[in-house]
Image 1 (tube, protein in one colour):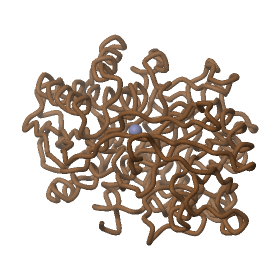
Image 2 (cartoon, rainbow, N blue to C red):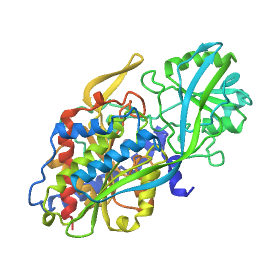
Image 3 (cartoon, protein in one colour):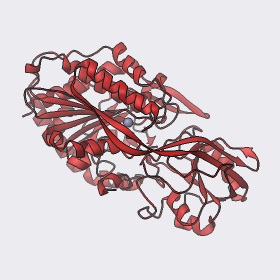
Image 4 (cartoon, rainbow, N blue to C red):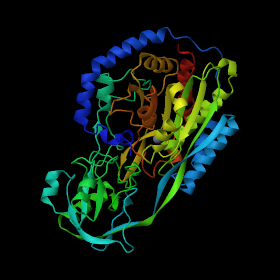
Amino acid sequence: MQQAERWESKIRTRTGATLATILRRLPSIWADRRRARRIAKGLPSFEGSVELPDEKTIYSWIEGICQTPHRRPGTPEGHKGEQWVAEKFREIGLENVTLDPIPITVWTPETWSLSVNGKKVPCFYVPNTAFTNPGGLSATLAYVGTGTPADFEKAAVAGKIAVADVTFPRMPTGALMRVMRACYVLSDPDGAVSMRTSQYLNFARQNFIGGCTAETAPDHDVYWQAFKRGAAGVCLILRDQPSNSNTHYGPYDGIMKPIPGLWIGKLDGARLRESARFGAKAVMVLEGASAPGVMRNVWGVLPGQSDETILVTSHHDSPFAGAVEDGAGVAQVQAQARAWSRVPKEKRPRTIVFVVDAGHFYGSQGAHQFARDHKEIMRKARILITLEHLAGKEVREAGEGYEETGRLALTVMFTSPEPSVIATVLKALEKRPARVTAPIPADFFGPAPTSDASGYVLEAGVPVISWIGCPYYLLDQHDTLDKIERSALVPIAGTVAEMVKLQMLMP
Ligand SMILES: [Zn+2]
């Protein structure tokens, strides 16, 4: 594995460390913003109109790609998603529509369960972990807290099933955006973000971040530490997940793992924790099959007057129905493809390459592979605009599930520090304000945006605007069509079109 692929382990998952880093950066964020504002004033305007698809059309694309229960990499459902994207690209009239295959191991679970003292505990599998023998793994439970070295000192796990809590960082987003002004601008015309707004980042499992192996895992990685200490399996409680949801599809690093793992919802987990403290007996089942397979990046070209390129990307794979993750992103890529395909070529100074890549849920390998396979495109790329999880409804915890808050889920735009890139975002948001979004430095949480843009950025160093949201249902089975706020679809496409217009003309 190349170094760049394993960057997930470098994401800052500690709230304190992240805030300290951002605090130090504030003066430079403010200075970049001042400079970008001056540049934004002098930017030329795009002559001619860009006609956006209507709400019904964009929504029908989300419905179109979300026809299967999931689009996991390398599965028949995943292949259906790839073909659907290619077909739409051809319909729109993109040139050179191509599917680039990437070999992977397709890990397909068939049955999974957990029984403690003969009673079933609701659970879901940890992707890409080892299968048990038929009939399952019978062993004693051992509770190891969050799996710190001190926790493991207190509980022997060899030959047992380790039970642990997995935690998420909680970001004080309101204080960050409103008080510290740690963003280039806060676009919030409805006043949805208050000083008290905060959010768990449930893609950043603090003690099981992903991207590690037994050799490279840090001391606080509970899965790999349990493995190294001889545990036969692990049951991980989603302690901070709002709701009792257990269908957490992570980590999605594409690394095959040596002992079976199961996720447990936080309310079920409270009971499991007690059973484990008393050393109850359990049977853990995870059966399925692994086989070599393939996933495919899909891309197409809209040639302009020059081969200088604007890249517009998302990914087609998803753990479940994936309306927001990432039917929403795919539909926004399609919206730009359709809109710009109807602008006469002589009015398009630059080429646009549209990529809907594979395997975000396989270590973002599709994005990495595209950047490696197409060095010439990457060399000519002036900007990467990656669109993910847009127009998702915000939810909050309600008993065992979620309820809608009536607001749109907050999004951020990871934005490269180049003043012209920040100016693009500022000017686009001034012209077409978006509901609840904040452009922030691209390296806010680590060396690259915590998004599907990371592969392109790490491989090719391309300047980026990565627009992405993180509602609580993102990685679970509740990411369904009803989570799409339809009224936001066209306005979002409008803001993106402004960015593309500015990048068409940017000197
Ligand atoms: Zn996504």
